[in-house]
Length: 529
Image: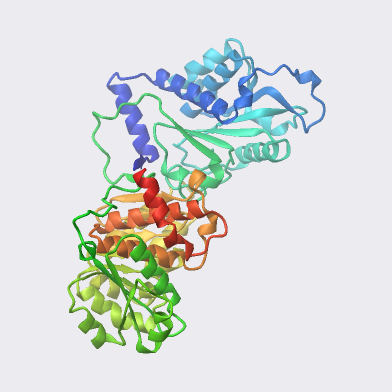
């Protein structure tokens, strides 16, 4: 896992490094500018060659002057990075136009130094000239260095016109938009738009990715995200509390099976289903639990659904649980060490059986109906939850279970940093007293102690075909299977979420929920190779 930083955390890292004498602000700015140029040429190798086509030879607004870049610099150090990029591109033979928002006399010292270096041989125009001009030769590159991670106020008025002009040149003239650190207008802590927001084709972040690159609108606004190192050594710095992590591989945990063990060594998961015609979701969950490595999996159904389920399963065992008394008798078997309740279960059945499962104090996943059954009185559920539980709500279920938290998350931000999905999930986990997995393309998993992780299905891990009926049921089964194997709840949820996306990536478009468990063997093979 890789830590995802807030704007404040990144600022602390930089300031600590500068104060310690490890590096100067000017050196960081120079490294950042070079990193941007390197990333541009890595993304578009054709731009490495200094073009021979002269601007005077370009005809018509649909043609790009392949030697021309426009740099839009803002009033802070992000603008200073822009001046460095402009200088490097000019040294490589590019025709570069630089526009500034703000008074150059008020630039921070390092940014002012790079402004002065640029103006020794180049002009700086007011940003209003950019938004007021319709170019006859649209630039190949537009560099967005207006605002970095520290933006706290919405972009509106004049700057909104600048953003609109950037979008116009990107969409109509096919100029390539490059954002330095984060697209201007995007809150780096939450991924929410603060007023108008730039849409980039390439975003270059420094040292670490920021939460806003992976949450909310961050991925759709950032285009391709590249993180460049700028030589910051954080080994001597005190770690931040409650830093969110990005899941980039299977979290630590033994997913193999030892040769001297047997099926009982890997736990016994129990999945409760609904009645006739409502067993499909539970069957998906049970299949997921078995495929991810639970030693045994039993489906517990009402008697009327037994024939329906028996016709569909082979490796999964079947038992009858009609009501509370049957369930209590079933739980006398202490080898049943993990439960999955909710998928297709039905509200009334969930109301009857969830309290019995929670009273047993064994590892438990609550999904779908097992959550919805308590939305009228969430506090009643919270009183029964324990530290070995995992809640897996989607957006609607989260809003019904934590309405006040969801209201804060949905509120349109007027200042930054804005309340984020990480903040919301951590607050929900603390209130519930257990792990919460808040589903979505930007899934966030949090524990009551403040630990959190983001499982992003964006950028190279984008899997829009995962939005299919039953995929969440399979995820609940994955978690239950890992809990049966002895994974602690946070690691079970993180690992299951990561593998869920990997299964979808391996299958590709056309995926249906039944395909997810069947691709787990391939994921295991990739992990062991």
